[in-house]
Length: 237
Image (cartoon, rainbow, N blue to C red; front, side):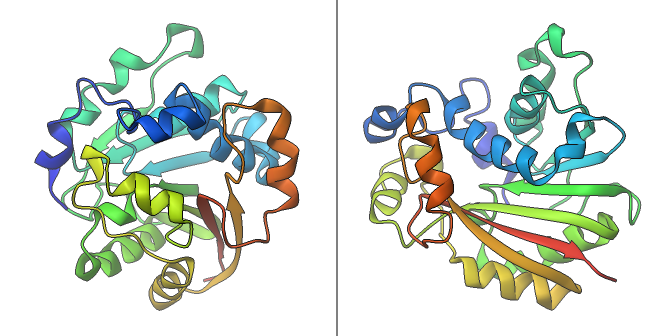
């Protein structure tokens, strides 16, 4: 995991919207992030009530946390990342209307400074494809370590089965070193690190910028061709 890779993009990070194909699907990165945030709020309605501790691992500029807060989530937000350049942008980008910015911390490779079992929910969104395959097991172990027994883990990733995803990733500068991974690889990696009950959904079949088509996405969640997938795990031990 190379901090400098994303430090270079921190100041003008826009989630890969320099790719013209991606811009055709949505005119802001928040529209893409909101697909995942809305899915998470449906899955975890208690996020809107406050009290839960949520970590976004590899948070970048905390855009997922910011969008969740904008949609009504009231968790105790924490973010961590290997890129101190990205973390330096968090407070600058966090709207005052959403209250205090999240607690943030720098990672040491895969490792975080948090005590074991601190978080009720851990998310990791579009991170693993930037982690070399030989280093992914360490990430899975750290995710399991910081998650409470009974806590929930949500892994969002680009779906390599979707040909448009492969096309866009191959032509996006921030993804120059990306190695996409299948949903089955994530499931096996998680189960090698801890005991989980797992299930999966597929997301983003329709352009995120067209609100009227959101219902179609939910109907197709079983079909392994969405641009994104999520592996959801409940830690059982």
